[in-house]
Length: 114
Image 1 (cartoon, rainbow, N blue to C red):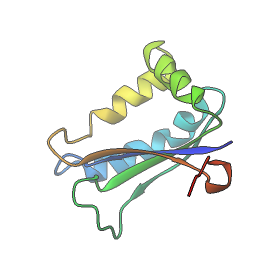
Image 2 (cartoon, rainbow, N blue to C red):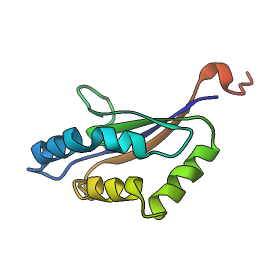
Image 3 (cartoon, one colour):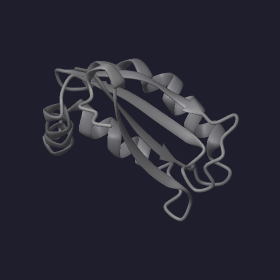
Image 4 (tube, rainbow, N blue to C red):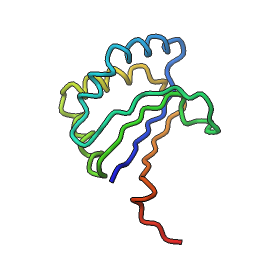
């Protein structure tokens, strides 16, 4: 069963071009550094949204299970390449700006009662 994790955030004023350059240089390595069961889908800038405080930039990762969230958390603490790149990328985030997290599950895999 697949999940999509979405992290939304704003970039500090005046640093969007620098963030774009950093991501261009590091995106492939970031994707490869994710733990097993996690696949980087990309980082996107929001073109249109009705959400007011969800952040203008969104990073999407496909997870193979709920447990993949634990693997990402562990990878962030282990001090490897994922931790290094995650720390570097967060230096661009505007902590006073918009922020959001979303975990989505495929409708066909969800337990639904009417």
